[in-house]
Image (tube, rainbow, N blue to C red; front, top):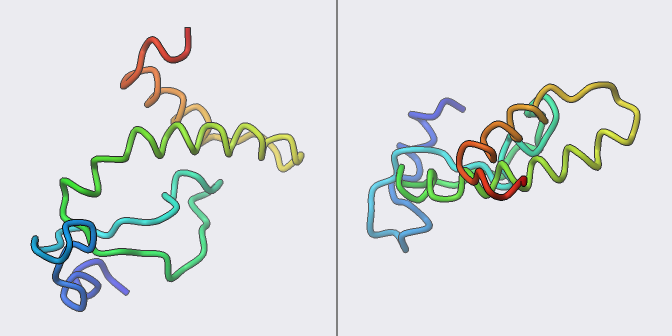
Length: 97
């Protein structure tokens, strides 16, 4: 389903208690947590832009930890690991000292 169709079917942000129009699709857990962004379908939620963006850095930290342990499974190099680490460094420079 396209984003515009999803938002039309779910017009209100579920995180704002249904009081603000949805503008985006929030994926829980975030796509970045999964190598190749391959995640189960059906875990999408209607969200306003503010609610969706509010946890993006936290999701990168979760993705970094999940991908770091997942890389021990021998599935090859994880290109998303560097992206998550770069986001963490940018948003929380003192976290990785």
